[in-house]
Image 1 (tube, rainbow, N blue to C red):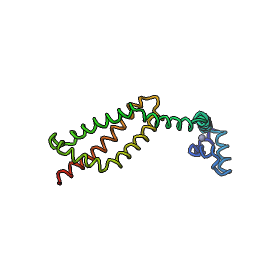
Image 2 (spheres, rainbow, N blue to C red):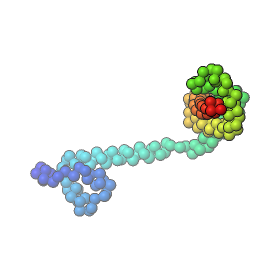
Image 3 (tube, helix red, strand yellow):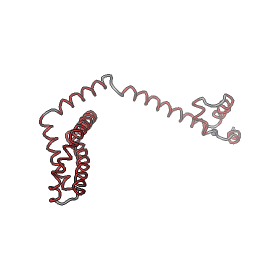
Image 4 (cartoon, protein in one colour):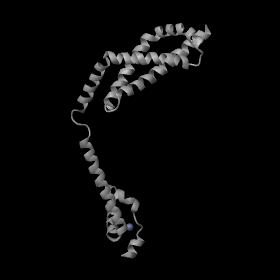
Length: 189
Ligand SMILES: [Zn+2]
């Protein structure tokens, strides 16, 4: 028995295929015979079968736990209340306040000294008015979308803070873009 097990090379890399039924019937019989004689491979076979069993049951459990029937409804309701919530005056005020603060911050952070900045402000406002309609709408849409996502998935977290951070990032980037462009136009002219 020992001798035969040693003569027959242990088919450890074929055990998975054996479990999946991917071997030829002839090879399957050979492995069957080997498992009867080789305790190492028999143990390995049991181990892999056990692992697959556990994996299977945990996947099934996961599928049952996931997504309650009213999941989609909850998300939609959440999003709807988010949009109407945004219309509350206090939040609008917060948004405007943050934007105004950022506007000043970006002006000073854009690399120019104060005098150049204030000389550039009028040009800047022209630029903002020119692109403002489009840009404002874009920013507003992105803001709404982001806040819906943030509120839906981070309802437990401080969403006010999260929205402020997102708004800050969006505003900083767009204002940086606008102010750079305005200052460049100013220097060229
Ligand atoms: Zn073996």
